[in-house]
Image (tube, rainbow, N blue to C red; front, top):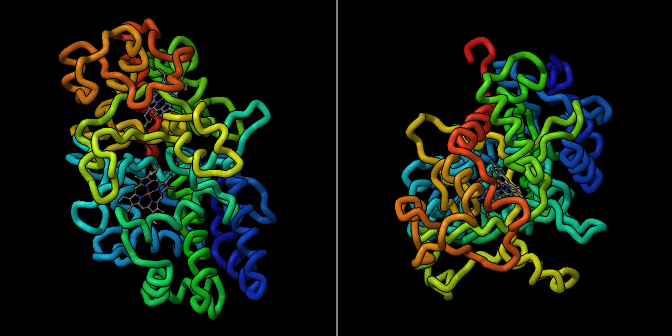
Length: 442
Ligand code: HEC
Ligand code: HEC
């Protein structure tokens, strides 16, 4: 077992360093960003990577450093919203694998209401865990777009050196999320909070005086928490299996083999990055799976935000690229592509009957439905109505047309020829990816 966070390397180390650099804020920002980008613990000596995660054998929650604790306080603070009723955790609950914590919402529209009643976003919240490990948004030599945060990658990481930090500046001032008027309001509330003192301790006396810098510090603190072993835990049964601390059942092994083989899942939800790099189940690329529209998405009727009504489609990566001078030429060929999500914690839920929603618009309500779609998308006939829920589609034995019919991936999915038992085995394997696995009581 690798000790991820030895108590001796806690907060004071980072704090002393930060204090030393009190007047060199940009260097601090760069240092923290580096720490985040490398996926290393902020207390790992001289930036020594701690690639081997806290393994499943440790049940005790690891202690947080000062900056991580600060980020945690901000992450869970409902006062940082217009009506003091919403925090980051309202849409990213740890008990559901850092995604939407409301079963009933997930069962229907799957997008979340903001601080202001009746204002909804247009996408399902992805996991806030493992998001810090996404590379800065870029185009590789083959022309493929990789990285960033959000389903469309638009939190690029260019501003603060890490996509998750860039991302963290959005929700506070998004009218359909926490809905505060301006960064100044966020800074004011953070500095007046019980943890306001910790903020100045971590970022230096006077850190509250400059709104722009303080807003950056808030985002970097959140990202530090998101990068901590409390969020990026790597404590699933699969991690224990990789560490040879536990064996898989026959069914789990069958599922893993299908995931790597016949199911082609690991082509995008990648597994192998070497023993020091536990798999993240994503290569941070973008793809259009041809997921149908979610008819229950309240965005269709949010006329104040969505003038297109039921004609609206989620353009994904292509929509973001169209807004970028350098990349607009690539928009068309990337329409409808969404970021490959991590599958870590994909089945984590507070109780067996708790409903989770899957894919960018929450169309699917169970892992089996997702697998069945991969398996039969191109086999079943097209439903008459493009706005058909997954329950109705299954009852009618059809799949609705894709939300975006350009650029649909037909080479890696659609007709996998999996048997019913093979579909089930894939689901069983995905259930081994939930953090908090207890070897003593599996
Ligand atoms: C009202 C619900 C809501 C609130 C509040 C909210 N989020 Fe999100 N979050 C979302 C949705 C929806 C997305 C996806 C949006 C998109 O792709 O356009 C998202 C995306 C993210 C991502 C990107 C994950 C990835 O892999 O791309 C991170 C990280 C995240 N949120 C963290 C936070 C933090 C930190 C806060 C608080 C400052 C927060 N969220 C507040 C709904 C919410
Ligand atoms: C071509 C790349 C690719 C392949 C192959 C692939 N996936 Fe995915 N997967 C994605 C993308 C992209 C999304 C998000 C699509 C969207 O939201 O529209 C996704 C979403 C998912 C989700 C929903 C996760 C969530 O948090 O909402 C699950 C579950 C999933 N995939 C499992 C699988 C399984 C099981 C296989 C193999 C049978 C597989 N995937 C094969 C790219 C891929």
